[in-house]
Image 1 (cartoon, protein in one colour):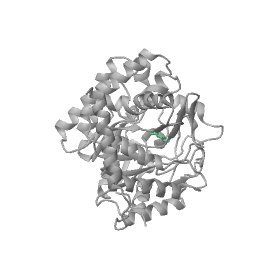
Image 2 (cartoon, helix red, strand yellow; image 1 turned 60 degrees about the vertical axis):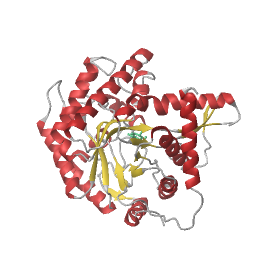
Image 3 (spheres, helix red, strand yellow; image 1 turned 120 degrees about the vertical axis):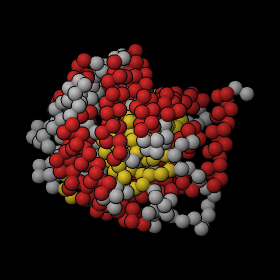
Image 4 (spheres, protein in one colour; image 1 turned 120 degrees about the horizontal axis):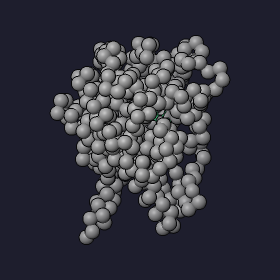
Length: 417
Ligand code: BGC
């Protein structure tokens, strides 16, 4: 039997097993496994402010609406206040990222001062018994790197892996889970195919090269980390969408779904899967695909117009288990909802499906809500409010939303009612 066919049959058998395990059973408890990592996530550029050494800075200044201030969260200085909120939430883990432009402000010169600053931040989390999930690259690069190189240049492999190794040398002892890259397909497609993120290219060949270089650099950093800290899980996050055919009986719709899955969900992870200790899932989107494009059901939508589709997280967890059979951390899931209308039910409904997946035998080890606080939402600026905590960008007053307390009660009970 051809290998691809055999793989497909095995994947289907795995999915059947998960579904059999999920036959209704009154005795099942709503609790999550002991040690489940309840957390929240942020990234450096989106929350630290004032990163003028970063390739996103010029773009941010363009996106910014008149009257919006330079300082919006100030995590860089006020991280203690945010950590107090994490303690209040009862978080078991926190996902944050390191800002490459701060750590290597000039080519080959690292900033000891800023490494020390991050040491303090990570230490504080440890002291609070909060596990550290540290992203090395959440899309932003130093200006010098973009001007002189960019990931399409072969030197990027050496330069980026040098940065990754330096993190492991300086901060490795304080990292519980290492996330080398956040959703690489976003900067790859938006930066090299669509021309919307730095370095604003629209070139398939440059895209292919950048893809290869990121993947190679990742593997070098993975090996280095394993040598120095063998017990620390290392991986990436993938923005993994739930694609399904608009019409299941239409072979062309099914074909399109296959192409989207291969390109968007799988291609990067497939390139590194032999060197990944877990699958880092970021789940936000569901699409029904037809020849005429993407549709969603628009039953309920967030402030960004994104469909709310919690059942999709169950489907993608099944797909990931069947394909990769690795432990899974849900490292992002959330919505923009300034009035906090849907956030609590959004969290509850997604977690119901996560719980169902765990009962079916899928090894899900953590859930991280995006985001702890309102922050800079890339091309959409400061209008979308993803936070469990509202931040007034004028006064920097922080106010937990109602859903913050809802999530806190879930964490306290280690599960749903
Ligand atoms: C990114 C975050 C972003 C979030 C909401 C994820 O794709 O990792 O940086 O803010 O989605 O759009």
